[in-house]
Length: 297
Image (cartoon, rainbow, N blue to C red; front, side, top):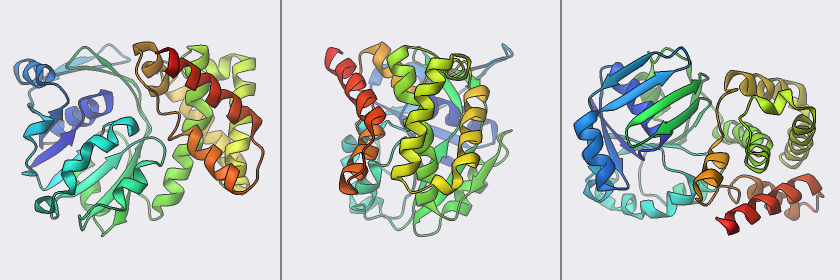
């Protein structure tokens, strides 16, 4: 079955690679014609931590050529690019089932105004780094979680994504699922971006760990999830270990001079804190620091 994948970044390439291994035909829609041409000619090159390398052939098109032909489509662009997807509001695409894989929660406002009958959201707990136009380095394995936001297509997405050699699970509560991911992103990403370190060093460096713990405590406080403190902190540390070589998406944005997703991650926490009159000084500090890096970029 053909499955659309809008976004040719690390996650888009990683998902497309495993879709191909799973017997599907991914059609990757990229921001540039150059990347689409390169993918058509060279396919996707996959590498993992054991130096295993494999290549698969895929079809790629410029995003302007998107026609909604595929009944199922994964949206893997960053939060900063969500507004560019206005074209999927076309009523001709109402029957397409979309799965959104973004950090943060800003995309929820976008989803609320879409005409589709079936919309799902998901979180990816894998470490991946794009190398050039068509190579992806798999730096840490985790899970993919999927939950229905509108309609009931999560079970169909589980069927499409199953058999990828790592867990793919259906979650009944999309909001709680995204909250948990937001806690992870708000605790990890700003620290890695400011200190320019991979995930693993957050637990090796006592000072970085202390900052991450402060952000974690403020985030679970704002999201009213302090009752799950021990469980969530354990998950956070496990993720740092499993993706120890990964450079967070926020760090990669800083290094490449692109705008980060700080507004949709820490900014989301700050907005919620303001509405509840909560003080979160550590989150405010890292927000300003990353915004300063954005301004410089």
